[in-house]
Length: 352
Image 1 (cartoon, rainbow, N blue to C red):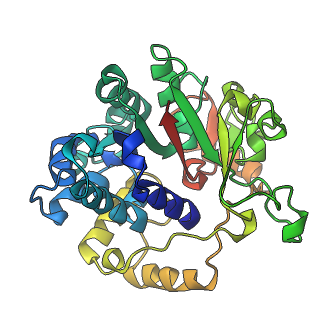
Image 2 (tube, one colour):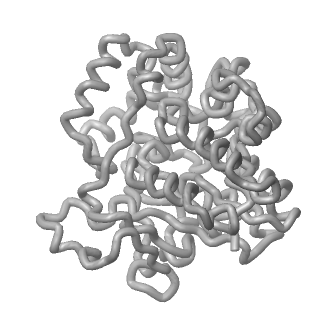
Image 3 (cartoon, rainbow, N blue to C red):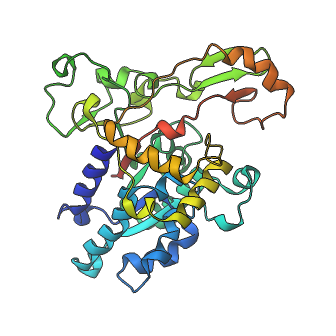
């Protein structure tokens, strides 16, 4: 989402940022390349094509196609050149330290990529144990309190009450007939609203993110709900909400020309997308890719798709069940129908 990207970049450029923050840990960076990233961010002579491996050779294909990500690293590098050594900001790559050139199948991903454990480990080793302060840039599910498996939940067992979690508003207050009908219409832009003890915090997660649609392979019943650990008020999961203006007027992020024109990297994106299960990634031709890029100009408005249950999903369940079985995940016999992670925008947390 371009609005959130702009907010983060403006925050980092604020002269007071480096007075309060020592590190920025990011989801869009492979920790295998941390030594090279440190040299680049410190201003050493590291070719840009080499440091690109940090965000292109990792388990998030969307990161490699992001203009925000490509601007973020050079921006922090430039910022540090204007600061005294003791105030320079370090960027920490949070993704699992994996050589993606050796990843050949989704089985390799499941075996080697443990994102939340990696994020938590980096925070504990490089920030919390050293009494430093960090801004974390991650998808909402990685940073929620009290879920057991999120990165924040993992390290809060040893470092409780250190993390202030901020999330954007997702699908809340969207599809309104007029701007004035919004409950947030009079809020300043931007605004930060606390969750604890407020009407926003009393709402459940489904008001902000569509629950995943799942089919139980035992009885082919379609269900649309979050796991039990997420079925609680938002004030138990996050600390505050970030409002950046009318929800129905948020803008999409565009793919930069240097990525679109890089045929070699586009092929690599296709390979990675197909391996991770993105529909049509393997069969998409360069012309089809180009037409999609051109078509995005028609509708620059960012929108998180609402769940629409297909009438054929239950009828197809029995047929799918007779074919090769998908590996069972954390929700037992529940088979995913639509990817949730692709629809979740980034959130940020600041350690107090």
